[in-house]
Length: 349
Ligand SMILES: NC(=O)c1ccc[n+]([C@@H]2O[C@H](COP(=O)([O-])OP(=O)(O)OC[C@H]3O[C@@H](n4cnc5c(N)ncnc54)[C@H](OP(=O)(O)O)[C@@H]3O)[C@@H](O)[C@H]2O)c1
Image (cartoon, rainbow, N blue to C red; front, side, top):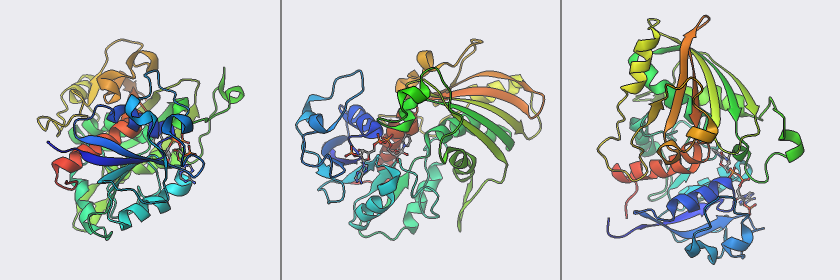
């Protein structure tokens, strides 16, 4: 690609916005040309407006960019959104209405009938829902799922394809970066576990049903299975750990299930998308894997790690998955969605 897309980031100063900035610093197709946030940040340089918390330094070329007000328009080819959900619904719709495609992390538009909720390795055909949207010109909205949903669905996809899912019980151990910045108060979380994350259990119980649903002439027919979810916030910086018990059709044995995970072929293989990891999921044999500290950066944060596959006396099988919540679960996932949309011809220069 000779010319690069001019890209804006809505919510550029937040936890997800910073990941976008970091991941796009050397992107071969996308160039950051606008950083947008609330009126509190607007007018400041990006380095003044942002509490940068990545261990890698802030990329030099964004430090002096003046942050714009996300409510005003920007001269860009498309935007990524890491906006707070209190404003994302309205602002994202305004961009799409101005003819600017929006690739969003926020929850607001995820479950709308004509909006793809996309993980390109899982439901690439759902992108054609864009054709049903009525925004002006080239405008549309595509969303990626909740960060824990991403871990759940990436781990379940090989099993759904090979056997069919019948019931799932999920318990999450979610990292602090999932709560944004400044997030959870230190006195609430140091040496503690908080068994409540507002709105999260509902998202994880419902979003997989759309992601794993079938595209029909009338839109997506949701998968019809029960998913029970319990969420916990734990004192981990990055990486949501997810324990799952699953009932599969035909009750396959553990070895057959492990082979299905190891043998899954990503539909993105051979497409040469810059953000696509070598392995969509990896199975780890060590008895104490996966762990956030050791495995969260597998595939540069884009590979979901799975381990501890064992028989479950209640549902059949159980396992543990680990997802990088701000990379595969947010900015990296959105970046891959945009690359896939370029491949499919929905994002063009
Ligand atoms: N963190 C994760 O792991 C994760 C994963 C998946 C999805 N998400 C979703 O991604 C979104 C961002 O999450 P986050 O963790 O990055 O949150 P965050 O750190 O709180 O950042 C929120 C961003 O929204 C901007 N914002 C807030 N109020 C605004 C307003 N009134 N007008 C315009 N901009 C406004 C903030 O700008 P200022 O700095 O100027 O206030 C900031 O850039 C949320 O919708 C979240 O649910 C997060």
